[in-house]
Image 1 (cartoon, one colour):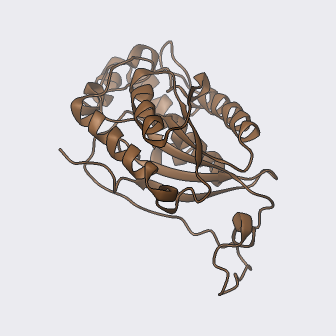
Image 2: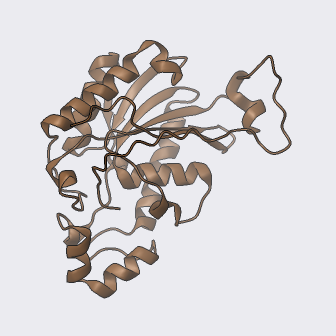
Length: 253
């Protein structure tokens, strides 16, 4: 779950047609996409944006509650995301427009969110529930360094979401926090689209909740810096993932 600065690009919209549902050929996007997903009502759409590059992400170090700022490239990545989201109707991502930008309280996320909010001309709101995992004693260490320091604990942590790092937060604890935050966002912005600027773990957990998947999803999803994913959360409790790890807007070093 350490931050990553891998150069690969993955753009993978997931299919939304429920088994047994045949959409009308002349109506590819019914109101609320209910005919495609089987859900009822208009969803709250979360445009999930990971923050831009920091020095810790360059070095592939655990970056939790530490508060590094964006690098020059990270600022360019934030600007690229802002330009994409500020395009007319956000390039089809937000046909009804984006009403707000919600950010983790950490500086790298707030800097990214501020660039997006300014480009969109919408308010930016800091939400503590979107903060990254507290990696405790592993903060600032590489994967290998954490494994060498606490080999048994590190191995258990990789296999059990309920095991926390030394003095830190388990993924299960983060999942409960993120679920509470998601419910609050859906209640505050019913049927609307918001940008959520956060970190690897909270975004993976939001996608896991949308997919109703198990803990292994945390270890099998890869999120690039400044990547964009999209999840719809419906008022009846259903959800749909529409886009994952899109980095077409991200400048390369």
